[in-house]
Image (cartoon, rainbow, N blue to C red):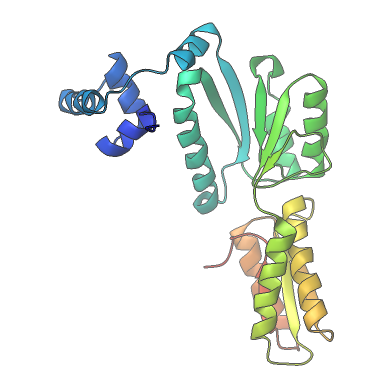
Amino acid sequence: MAERVTIKTIAEIANVSIGTVDRALNGRGRINLETKERILNIAKLMNYTPNRTAQALKRQRQIRIGIVMADTPVQFCDHLRHGAEDALEELDDYGIIGDFLFSHSLSAQDQLEVVSGIDLEKYDAFLVNAGSEEIGTWINRVTDEGKTVATFNSDMPNSRRLFHVGENPYRAGMLIGGYISQCLDRDDPVVAVLMGFAGNASHDLRCRGCIDTIASLRPRVRFFRETYYDNETVVEEKLAGMLKSREDKVDAIFLSSGIGVD
């Protein structure tokens, strides 16, 4: 059976966004006439037929999802946002709408400030980049009110979220710990382990996986630990102070997130 042609297929061939294809096929919104003609020709050549089921669903009811996430660090969070935007474009035919609800960071204070102002009646479901136990409590309250909640990137495994999409942070930490162990050239090495947010389950599990693995391979290892709150200035200060003040040589440094790696 031949693969069904979708607006995503046409968008990839035309090298345009799914939204642009939708506007061309449905004659709505602003679009360059040359681009529109190219898209319509591609659709005709590929015998494209609309997904009537999706269109019927869209007409019946819209589904609104609140996407709770941080907007910093920008170099990482922009990737998450772009991925969510691409998914929302693909789901547009089904009447699914997403609102980004940004906090400045994954700290409990920043995220609680955002979620406390949400009108729950406005949303059918939430996607949450969960940063703390406090957000886990909010997730439980929201699910008790009949809303579907899923977590992504950073999980809150003890909450009543429906599912999580993301890495296994403990195993990721183990992998990094194994690499670090191979690079250590002393029998009694010193390893600095820096955690973004102490209340973040993913950050905690990455650090634990790293520490457990190094300790199993290098029994005489000594660990030095700090927290940097996903703040580039803080992590630079912590590292500078640590390297300047410690008499012992620091053999390796592990950070639970990408902040400060430059």
